[in-house]
Length: 301
Image 1 (cartoon, rainbow, N blue to C red):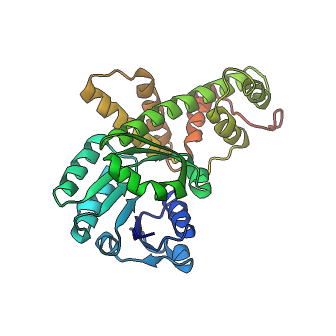
Image 2: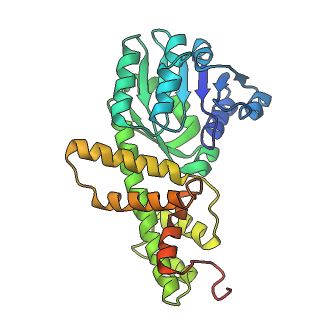
Image 3: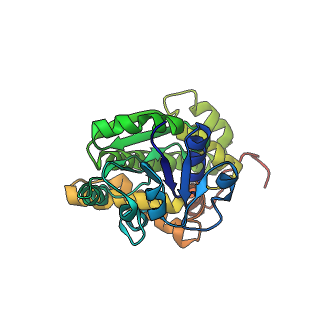
């Protein structure tokens, strides 16, 4: 294990991802913008740093997992950022979900310093991060991907090199389009069942055996029935990704009518103060319009 590993961003996803790297035996230096989140990893053997620059100075490969495009630009290119502490031959791997356009810009600026970049957003939520079963979509040079792949394998199972820089982020936006529309569809179906006086738990059970079966119906359908909206993937982050997809589609001249509809539903949910909930909480917008609630214990009011 010749490469020293750094990790920036120890939130819901980042902390378990960093922990899996640490468990695999890699020496790890880490940084989080909110103080205190790294104490558990420090107790497990990680070294905490005071800035992204310090992380870069002690690493050969730096992973970044933060909230949005401005946050990535700040920790990578900002004052005391990764670029200031980096050097030629180092690799920056951004596993956040951000704009493909911003990704390409950051990759170009790092390239001017001799630093390679991969964009490697993930899917699988907190559970996948904890279990090391994430799907990882990677953009960048093939040879850099091969160098980093052994570390990706500590965090995920389905690891695909999609193309050049920006391709990983484009793939993630495709993922977010599908998941958002699937959550909306599952929500519509369960609300329709409930309003019709039919047990939505039984409807879900029946649909899981047919062509409507999906991972979203299985996992998020269960969340909806149990009213378990503890965040795995936060609404506000999915809202951000949906907006990024729509802005990118506008530049490309692509119409995404279903995505635009769900974007308005995210907006309604945020206006109700629910943006910190799990993205399966999108169903609550539909429930309020229908004046009904989907619940597991059918008949108990």
